[in-house]
Image 1 (cartoon, protein in one colour):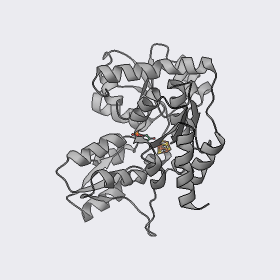
Image 2 (cartoon, protein in one colour; image 1 turned 30 degrees about the horizontal axis):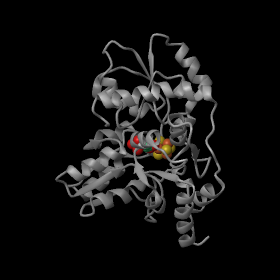
Image 3 (cartoon, rainbow, N blue to C red; image 1 turned 180 degrees about the vertical axis):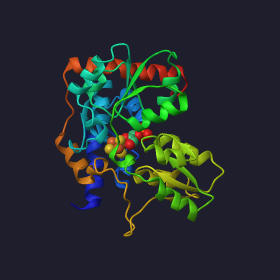
Length: 315
Ligand code: 13P
Ligand code: SF4
């Protein structure tokens, strides 16, 4: 279908149906352009909660759209491609996790938002990469904690806080596959550049990084930094917003010999303009959940939002 037609129709349908488009920084450039709000998982969850539109079209992955539905269940929440999953969410099946939790009854459960609603329902507190460190620091030192499902983010939080959280063995297939040597090669070629990494990266990458933070934290770091060059260790979709927010700076990522980005998240990239158009037109695929699951999964997310406000992380 013609791109101009798709863009025109998306804007028309959005208005006609009183819909809002929420988009993550890893979405395709053209989808970011059409989004009413783009942000990291934390900001998007908050936006979804406050949203008064009849329809929320979530251009991100399934757990993000599910979180929007949990926080604002009276809205119709659409996801352009229902197969837009996440390897972290896939790594943690509710049945297995319930057993793991039962084996450690004296531990509280903190789950990274990249998990299913069923895992959220089994959790005491949810976190995102934008608030995980501060939330964990705010808990009593003697509190025993299970952290799921990202062992890289959990390991990083353990390292910076001195905690000994018990980690579920899940990884992001995109960030875990990144190799420290590749970033160090870029550093040799651009010695003045700062390496900035998402905490889902493996430990070797995090060790060579000058800054570790969520997608939004990386954007802020670039803006506030005196540096002019950045080696970016995360999904390359965010380069679009980095270049918009800080156009005078230079960015380097790991590419293969054909010059293409090796670190695309295949789940995030499932959403296309055509699917976004059809999803608005047909109002499907829609996120649905039982009222009971919504209630159970909502508690630890609300606790996260309340604590994030108390700690001054969000307004
Ligand atoms: P952020 O919350 O930092 O945007 O991360 C979401 C994500 O899925 C990273 O892979
Ligand atoms: Fe999940 Fe990784 Fe894709 Fe983020 S980049 S949605 S954590 S698979």
